Length: 452
Image 1 (spheres, rainbow, N blue to C red):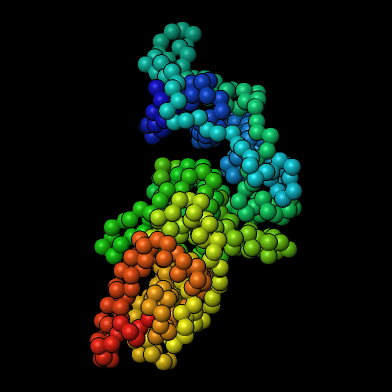
Image 2: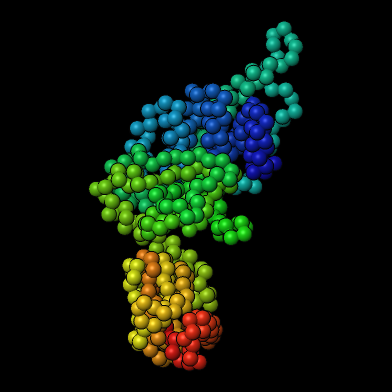
């Protein structure tokens, strides 16, 4: 059978309360695939659930050992926390994790590796579950199911707690995003203040509209990112997998969450909240800088993959083009383009929100609200006339700017890009005409006057 099929079979047994058969399935998986650390973790969870605390501790300790030696720092923290919940002294393990994965560690490299989980389609011979589990009493009679559970627990724990079955480990590991930029001492303090959550299917992690008071690491499992339309329909935006970071943009920008994140199947999540950040106050500027850099990199990656401006280019050409842009942070109320000014170039909104307004303050016409991924400033460059509208930031925003000479070269070299901007111009001018008509100020000369 396939590995994923056996895992599903074990979950069905667990749902029915048949812990013995679930453990037998897990034992067979580990006999064939000893590097399946997730299944080892499942064994430990079952052992803890049925009250086999000592056996569970042995398995959690083995998982933590393999995680730390194999490049899975986040999953290692989950195993360490599980040990702590059983009363185990985990201070040495946390110190070891911080030492191995903190800044300056010789084990960390930009091009590192980690123990990879076996593919879900790996073939494993299934166990024979048709026979009764357990030992018959000495005087004959029916099998005692309690003895079957004890035998299954001992057998599964024996193979899951074995720390000799994996002998090859990577020489160096990839850094833990953000955290590996901290010193060993600061890393250890964050570990002490971070919280581990082991969540079931459908559990919400982040809700749209809530304040961002933490960011999260997905240590294991899967989660989906989605929004909810006005009619209640859910629109999925993507999936997150082991090692993903999410929720940091709302924390960095002090803005409400923009989307929902919920668990698919099961997931282990590590939350780093304000308390954890306060624990590294002496290195807070480095953490803030790392968070900001990570957020920008994520936003830029999203922009490169979704903006129509970059669609005609190869990945390398996209990077070459974006290198021509300069980045700027703007505070709420800052005018990015002022009515009457000469067109300077093309702007791309990386984060935040801006408004397009006509007239002098207080502006007599609201033309549009622009969001991340939107561009502006192209019309005055295309038409060669001054901007006749103001673009102002309504929230803290990040803007990418491409100077006029580079923008003109771009549209001259690629007719498809020029056509895209010409079509955008027509739509925006139509919006201007509609806005001015509603305001009773339309004078039939919108095309030549509204250029931003």
